[in-house]
Length: 409
Image (cartoon, rainbow, N blue to C red):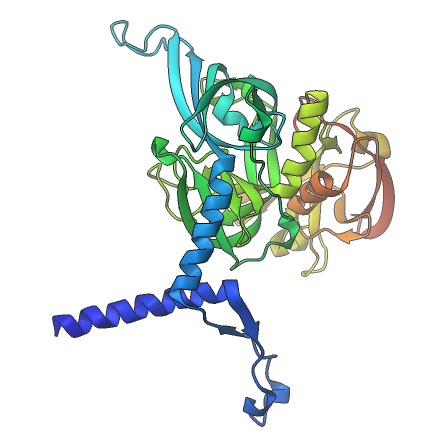
């Protein structure tokens, strides 16, 4: 009996692997002759995967690792540590000192530029980069952008030792697509893990570190839009590493995990390659990236909020809660919320303009505005907002500015 059970487990595992392998081979449509007589009343049939072999699957992974691993680096950081007055005076961390941190990064070009997360190198006094062949080099920070959690560092090594990653278009990524991460979890260099894309369009809050006091954010905070969610195991040390598609091309930079225990719980987040491709060249060329800024804060209009505002139950959009004084939205005449009500026992703002479209693109949530600004606009560009004001539709022209250090998007 034990042998039969073991055999069943092995066969089941092989079937699962074969199903994954099929994503690397091809798909074929279900024959029309196989459809039931009521096919016209049924949803269109899904493409049936053509399963490959375990060997095909393994070969794909081996090839991707051999191609991309030389592009991924380990980053060792020494950073200043502030004094900790809340600790006893005899505690080793009571006074100021130094701390070490580990992270990942990847080669951007043959000029020695390496991309990582801002939070990996923020506050660094020394940075050491180690390549997959074991060679290492000192690095320095070129520029960083806390609002996208990206940074560029540089090393002085021969160009023939640098192998840049290839980059894919993250807007083409689909939920269910195979995903591969390579990084340095817990300092275990060039570790490869696999999984799938488990969700898209997430937002990742990023606090402005300059406004953090005793661990609490004071004022300005933003969010990174269109973040990719994956169940590919990501752990401390993976930050700044690569998330790849089945062709071995970069679709995101692994940045954060959702975990109550501090280790991988199957929910990891990666900054999409579309943002990386906009921010990184600007950091290299200009030393900074200017984020388009509209100057509002707000919330998503759901069914309860729509009802409270006297709108149609199915009305969706982004309610403008606050308009930042002297910002682009304020200059264009956008209005924030002026009233409060109670929804499900909680206080909620109502009475402001509801944005339903931006440049003709439907807005179903506040995140839609953030995503559009980050992916489709530049500073000084004029956008058209379609709004509902007192239940009447109108349009406003807003000329975007560079994001200042103030609250809002």
